[in-house]
Image (cartoon, rainbow, N blue to C red):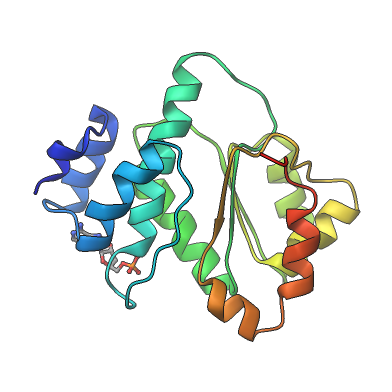
Length: 180
Ligand code: AMP
């Protein structure tokens, strides 16, 4: 199978070509059609098998389609929670690479550094937020993040997030998401 067979839009196919990707990996082949149908998905695959692109590519497509029909607001529409700052940065870089031809704004949020640049980025508006749970909750409690417009929610490395003791933070964040 080729990426062309997955009904992806041209700006994404062009970005994947730039990345040098030709064929989807098995998890991408299986996950992308399900996410494009806006269905819930639980994915398991070993490290290095392309899980990030398996969710980032179809999310970018759904968000781009919304953008094209003009639902433009400053509120974030997609949230990815991940356990570590390294993963948060890597995921954001993947969204930047695959979304290079799509005009969506992104913010990355993690602890251990000054919150100021992150707050500034949020205030300019973000379509996509990639965050570690603790700092996100902190910024939510200070009123800098409003999750009421989130349409797509990802728990990346959910098992590791639980191992690291983030369960209560994750629950508090989920409680602020739209019910649907
Ligand atoms: P991940 O499992 O998401 O950490 O991805 C592992 C590596 O595989 C990353 O360096 C990606 O850039 C790369 N990758 C992901 N999908 C593909 C693909 N379809 N073809 C070639 N490389 C890929």
